[in-house]
Structure formats: structure tokens, C-alpha cells
Image 1 (cartoon, rainbow, N blue to C red):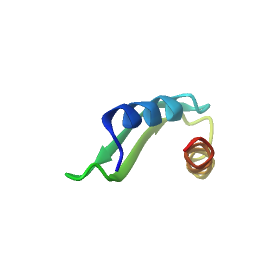
Image 2 (cartoon, rainbow, N blue to C red):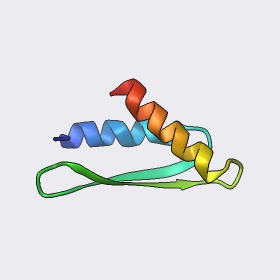
Image 3 (cartoon, helix red, strand yellow):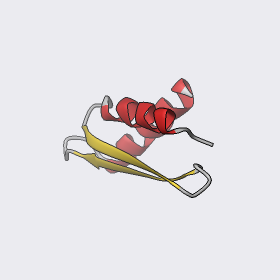
Image 4 (cartoon, helix red, strand yellow):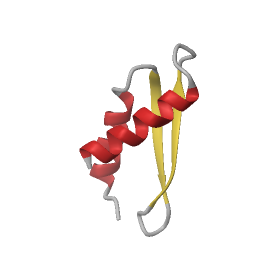
Length: 61
């Protein structure tokens, strides 16, 4: 389960990724992460952004 403070930390981490403008993490009723939404620039490809998001989340948490 992810606490509200953790969700905010995750979003702050994702927002530091080059090319990411904004991010939002969606949780279910039990505080489990169900979706990760990312808004990015067109400077980097979607696959690279996805890899960076995955790597950042795995490395940090």
C-alpha cells in the first residue's frame, strides 16, 4: 500500500525526469497504485520516458 506522503514523493521524483512536465499517480480504495499518468514534452520518445519512469521507481523505492 502507498501512503499519501509516498504518492507525493513518487510524483515529485517522476517530475524530475528530463522531459516530464507533470505526473499523477492513481490509487484504488486500498491505496494500491493502479495507474501512473505522465505528461511530457516531445523532446524524448515515449519509450524512453517509460524506461526512465520504471528505472526511477525501481531505483528509489
